[in-house]
Each structure stands twice: as structure tokens, then as C-alpha cells.
Amino acid sequence: MAETLALTATTKAARYAELLPQIDTLTAGEPDLTANLANTAAALRQAFGFFWVGFYLVKGDELVLGPFQGPIACTRIRHGRGVCGGSWAQARTLLVPDVEQFPGHIACSSDSKSEIVVPILKNGAVVAVLDVDSDQLNDFDADDQAALEQLMQRAAQWF
Ligand code: SME
Image 1 (cartoon, protein in one colour):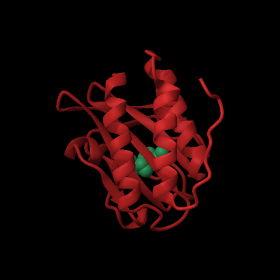
Image 2 (cartoon, rainbow, N blue to C red):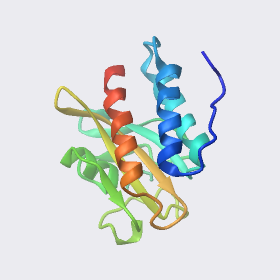
Image 3 (cartoon, rainbow, N blue to C red):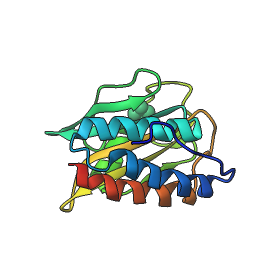
């Protein structure tokens, strides 16, 4: 397994196109969920310098903090609460250009300004969400959504 990422592209879409196959290689043949989620969070943060990247896992009626990269974060989120709990409840990606405009946003850090949350669906049910936070307003767009949704479709096989 290569233990470094090779990233040369300067546009975001091209950088995702470089990164996703490398995450496939990094996780191929590894059966451990925590290992794969941890390396995925690290690869995304390393590639794009996001403020916070991590996973919340569905456990009973809550999301519980999983592998992440960035500052310490909220541990548990209720179904339907915040961006993460909303993405879980609606089973769809939520893209939030300005977290202060999102009703019920959970501010783990006041430095977080925009956010995208992508659910991982296994057999039609949400098993986890990927949360990516930026310290810039309006930092996520359709390119992030398309690439991260593709990545989370592949991540479903780890569960
Ligand atoms: N802002 C998220 C909470 C998780 S942290 O940002 C890491 C939310 O509203 O669900």
C-alpha cells in the first residue's frame, strides 16, 4: 500500500478525481471499518486542508462521533438535530453555505463557517454520515457533493 498521496491537480474536481482512486487503494482489502474511516478522513483533510473532516456513526437513536481529523468535536447528535442529524433524518446530502443561516446548526467550533454532510446508506438505511467543515463561507459546491457522494457509496461496503 502506498502511504503517501500523489496530488498534483489544481482544480477541485480534478483533485477529487486523483484522490478517489487512491482512497480505493488505501482501503482495498482492509476489513476494519475504523481503519478505513480514519484513513479516509485523513486523506480528505490532507488533500484539501478542510477545517474538520470526520464521521458520525448511527448508534441507536443517536449519531456518535467516529474517526475524524481536526479539532475536538461534539460526541453525540440526536436524530434530526443539526446538519448531521438532518442529513441522517432526510437520508440525503445537506450542503450549508453559511452555518449561521441553518436552523439548529450545532456549533462544535465557532470557526466553522460552511459545511457539507453526506450520508452513507447500507441496504437503504443510513449507517453513518460524513461531515466536512470549512472555516470559509460558501466553500462547498456541486463538485464536492458529487465526489463525496461517490466516495460514500463506496464506503458503504465497509459496513
Ligand atoms: N455542525 C454539525 C455538528 C458536527 S461538527 O461540526 C463536527 C451539525 O450541525 O450537525
